Amino acid sequence: MAALQNKVALITGGESGIGLATARLFIAEGARVHLVGIDEPKLASAVDELGEDDALASVADVTDEEAVLRAVAEGGDRFGPLDIVVSNAGISGAVTEIADYPSDVFARTLEVHVLGGFHILKHTIPRINDGGSIIITSSVAGLIGFAGLSAYVAAKHGQIGLMRSAAKELAPRRIRVNTIHPGPTSTPFQDDIEMRATGQPRDEAAKAFDALVPLGRHTTPEEIAQGMLYLAADQSAMVTSHTFSIDGGLSG
Image 1 (cartoon, helix red, strand yellow):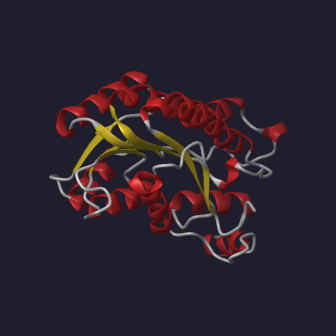
Image 2: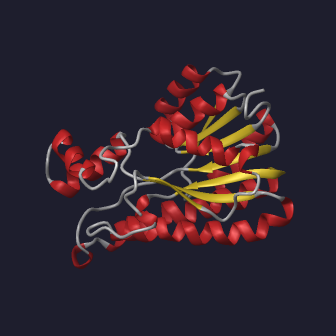
């Protein structure tokens, strides 16, 4: 039997990158998937690819609590209770030293990652079945520091605190809550960070980041999706309050 047969998953930031790769794998493993994101054309394209029988899309900014509440209700009306929640929406913020960092960008970066993650948990917890799984996409930046990325690093560390509180609260219902920590991953999101951080074209910037990774290369979205699958499936029934790194040894 497929690992997620008859399960229902909600994935924020699901229209591209890691979120979309995760949706593809979850559907291949028997799940139905509700994608939540801010890019309506990309969401529509994702549903076309994944199939309307197995996928639904809702447009919502995770910082807008009412929009999150509406989106979660849409998914419930279509697919019923949740078994898996992947809180994956994120932004990179600015790349500059703290003394020059724009305060509004700092606040917005924390708002998307931490407040947005809180909104997702707040409004999916009442709809998730006992024994379910919640996964928050943090980053290697949630485990170590990087110069010039203070807001992103702080936000990704903050998600760990949110995860640990939720894990303790939901343990009586056997709901596992974990963070997943990708290292540099081959997506346009990561390309943008690397080019701004190094001031180099994409290929040269990627090589510079490859040099930081002990295993010598970027991770693929599909490899991160495999980690998501493990945390979502029954095989991880005793894994909770855990920071799961897939970073080629960068945080070690």
